Length: 273
Length: 248
Image (cartoon, rainbow over all chains, first blue to last red; front, side, top):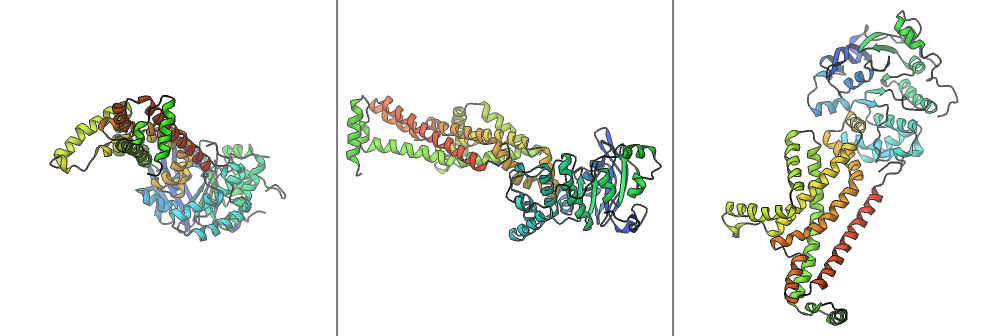
């Protein structure tokens, strides 16, 4: 099923007030290596934005900036009412991170905790939520990611796809305003990619504001409101999936997305979940 | 004591194979010896938690990334593991303790006993070794796991408490148990400053009775047994903490 792109006016050019996330001229270097060379990006509440582009183009770094895991040298980053680039001190960053969930390529679950405890730990310890209520929420989330039977398993006993779905549930347990997905299927074998994408697609349909760094071109095309193409630390182009994947006049983009034709990422009916 | 008969029997039986435990039938020397065992056990039971608590604290300082925390601890770790514990103990008791006495206006006002100095020196020495073992474990926690925890919103201290230390403990446990076994043996340095643990008590007895071998057998069996229990307990904890599907 495909969203109607026409129903959703796209970002950047439109309606600056409703943007939940906004990056303006963000520059970031690690040592002498310039990673981001003036990134502009805006994500409206409820939208799904995919960032695509070759490896090393700074995609993951953009997500890390939004979550204040790295601090840019210049530029403005706004999430909700928060100027992320101006945060100082740990407590301010924690306040931001409570609202911004992030899911990583390598899942990064806590290996010594059961699936349930992985999900429950942050809400109880960071938000001070009660244990019984949080467990109830965790079980609901496990049902949502189709892992109800695994609550007492340890991460090491799960497949990559299962671990990644737990990681998604763990992020959602904090009830974030926004979830960042950092190449969440890149470490998975082709058969388990589908089960993770399925969960993300459900989330996006429910209106979760999402920013995805992905190499799943078909998936990006299907679920995104906006696709952003980055290369060498710059946004080369952005637009609707139709514009980026099919009608782009930019030869570099056509070459890049053309290289993925017939690639994975498509979810067919009946694919193993 | 109701079991004088048992002791008499033991003394006469062991004397047939050339061992001399006659002092057990006396009041005073037997008391010194029993108290020696009690003191050693007390030292061990006190030192294990003391060394673990300070070891954890030192490891947290060493891995904090804050120089004002890590530098003094690093200096202490190097000092304590590179110099003989016996010398440290004598220095502490003969120099530091005297210094404290003069600060508080005389020995009679000094609350610090020889027993205290044994606990402090041995406890902090083993703590330094625990800290190095734990540091290795903390540094072995994948950076990505720590980043994920921070990204979720855990503070640095919470990451340490809920993620790094639980994982580090599992990795460091064999080394920590090794340190604890050393700790049990190291309590005997107390005899250098007249803390009447078991070797000190035994020396008191055998200088009078000339029964070194008889007492030595008991001392060796005693320490072997205690350390067997420590090692077994360590193994039990290791199994208890083992995570299914995880390498440690």
